Image (tube, rainbow, N blue to C red):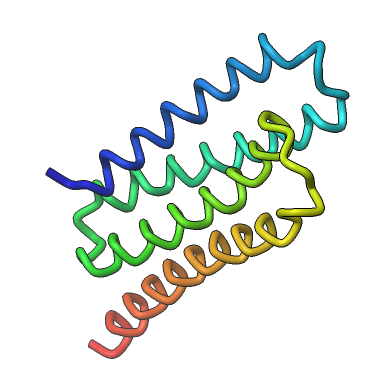
Amino acid sequence: MNKNLVITCILGLMAITLGAFATHGLEDVLSLKEMSSLETGIRYQMYHVIVLLIVNTSSSFSIKLKNSVSYVFFSGIILFSGSIYAIYIFNCPVKSIWFVTPIGGLLLMIGWILMIYFFLQKVMIKKNK
């Protein structure tokens, strides 16, 4: 069993659950700006879940790349989206975790850089043949 796929599916379920909870449970509690921030965290989580599903089911990617991208994206989702959830759902003071969100965003970018590197390597290998 591919543990990356299991974790990815759990993260997808969480995104859908949090989206429903936000829409139906927090619409009267949060301001429009706060709701927009919460939706950004949910949306970024779901975008990366979709990418992880593609990466981890594709035969084009090596196990090493699947694991690298998965771990970086998992960490990025937890830090980026998780910090937004902590602020808006659990009322965690922004001052105490302000630095976590950009670190998570940086990890998400690193995941994309890993995939760019992989694709460039593939292009260069084909070009040199």
